[in-house]
Amino acid sequence: MHTNSRLSVDDDVNYDLIIIGAGAAGLSLLLALDEVNYAGRILILETNHKFENDRIWSFWQTSDVPDSINEIVEHRWSSWSLSDQKETVVHRDESIPYCCLSAASLHQQAKKIASKRTNVVFAFGQQVTNLKTSNFQNFIQCQDNTFSSNFVVDTRPPIAIKQMFTASKNPDKSSGETSIDKPKYGLLQCFYGLEIKAESAAFATLQNKVKLMHDLTSTQYGLEFVYILPFSETSALIEFTGFYTELPDKAYLFHRAQEYVKTVIADASYTIIRKEQACLPMYNISYRADSKSIIKGGIAGGAMRASTGYSFLSIQRWARKTALVLNEGKRLIKFESIPRIYRLMDRVFLRVLIDNTSQNPDIFMRFSKSVSAATFARFMSEKATLHDICSVVLAMPKWIFIKAAVQTMIEGKP
Ligand SMILES: Cc1cc2nc3c(=O)[nH]c(=O)nc-3n(C[C@H](O)[C@H](O)[C@H](O)COP(=O)(O)OP(=O)(O)OC[C@H]3O[C@@H](n4cnc5c(N)ncnc54)[C@H](O)[C@@H]3O)c2cc1C
Image (cartoon, rainbow, N blue to C red; front, side, top):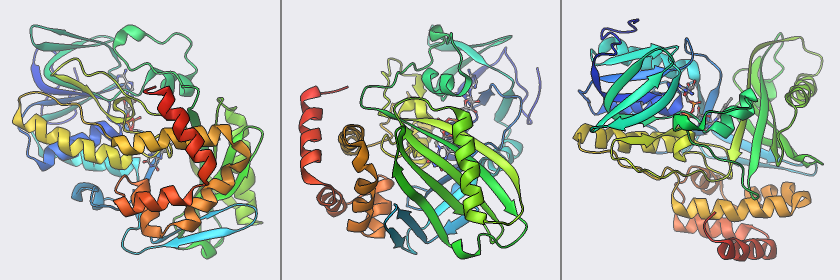
């Protein structure tokens, strides 16, 4: 067995807590446990052989962002915009900036905790294949080892999401992983991002302005747009994104991303320094918590906001509450990461998008034009006031939303 920090990985030991997955949810929980000074022995099992700097997380800086995350934020922007073929709407609010951090920064923060604490250990290259409970103990089976613990937080992404990435034909449903298929009124948010380093100041005009949804267009495949995070005058992340009903071809997404890079930076020479891609579920995900000692976290635990694909902030809320409960040491509680009002509004919104494809750009433009920057940011971050919610509802085209709301009510729980 290998040792990644001062506590060595041992399959004879019964751990207090095993976290499956060292991604956003697993590591955010570790940070939150450190914050409450959790003393139990923690083992983090990760299938990858090392940390991969494979994504950048962006979010609005609300009170849900813990100090340990605030201190590793790499960029903050006080302005973001949306545009279609006709116009651009610019939002600006210094008090609730849009910010981002790289996966590498979160990994560094987690490694710092593991090196200062004697109760935390990482085991990489451990693919969890099965999860069983017997005599109040949980047994986590990996390919070559079995580990046991009192509590388990399972953050393996749902099988369907993994399939989208790996195109695996035969997922093992006996492993206890969440299996969820896209419902009729669900979309896939698929994107291909290129982090660019240009040889001249190609992004000078974008400074302090994020292009959140740029060039919104309704195409035969779905709603498409470009997302641009300018990091400096010479570097930016340019991401071609679509909200689709069917899984698109990765080569198409890459090609469109490259086209946009050329449009944005004109004739400047550039290097692609990193690529990122995703296919995220735009539908509510839920699971039944049948055990008092096992819960799911992250996307598998329902942390993804169906209408936006954002989940980093809701993971922070969930991590804080879960760490407090674990610290009490009694039992694990399933927390709803996305409050019910947003889950309901998102179902209606997605039905509207799917049933009215040609109007999609207009719906987003109307929404952004009719609300203030702060309302927009709070609504996107599940921090809306009653007044914000009323403003959002009033901003939407009435009849298509009323119709979709009635149909959603009739349909009941999906
Ligand atoms: C490229 C990209 C960009 C994104 N950008 C944003 C953003 O800007 N803002 C935002 O809010 N959201 C964003 N998201 C969405 C979401 O926040 C992320 O997907 C987030 O990482 C989800 O956290 P998670 O813990 O559920 O899953 P992950 O972070 O994917 O972590 C799951 C971990 O479990 C491991 N694992 C899987 N199977 C096993 C197994 N069998 N055994 C052991 N370990 C296993 C995986 O290797 C992984 O490390 C982005 C997603 C992607 C892919």
